[in-house]
Amino acid sequence: MTTARDIMHRGVECIGENESLFTAAQKMRDLGVGALPICGEDDRLHGIITDRDIVLRCVAEGRDPGQVKAGSFAGEDLHFVTAEEDTDTVVRTMAHYQIRRVPVIDQKRLVGMISEADVARNLPEEKIAEFVESVCAPTHR
Image (cartoon, rainbow, N blue to C red):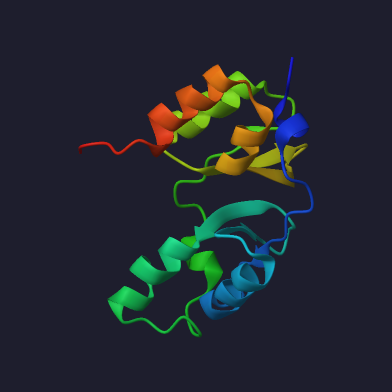
C-alpha cells in the first residue's frame, strides 16, 4: 500500500500566522510554490494560504498585503491527510474538497505537502485520471 508519506514533498516551509501576506508572497516566489501552510506559534498547522488567496481576497479587495497577517486566513477550509493514509484516501480528499494540494500531518505536526504534481509523478495512470477528472476538470457550479 502506498501512503501519503510515500508521495509527499518533504521539507515544507510554513508562513507564521503573524507574518504578512507580503512576506508570504515573497516566500512563495523564492520557493517557487503557489501555497504555504500557515503555522502558529505552537508550531502546529493552522491553515494554508495560496497565491490566489493573496490576489483575490487581499489585493483585489484593496487591502494592503503588508498589513494583513497570514493568520487571518488560518482555519478557513483546512483539509489535510495523515502521513499513513493510503493514496486512495489522499485522492478522494483532494477530489471531495476540490483542492490541488493537501498538507500531510503526523502526530499533529506538519511533515509534508502533496500537490497535483506529486500525484502525477507517483500514482498509477488510473489514479491520475481519477484525480484529473475530479479536481482539475472544469466544473459547472
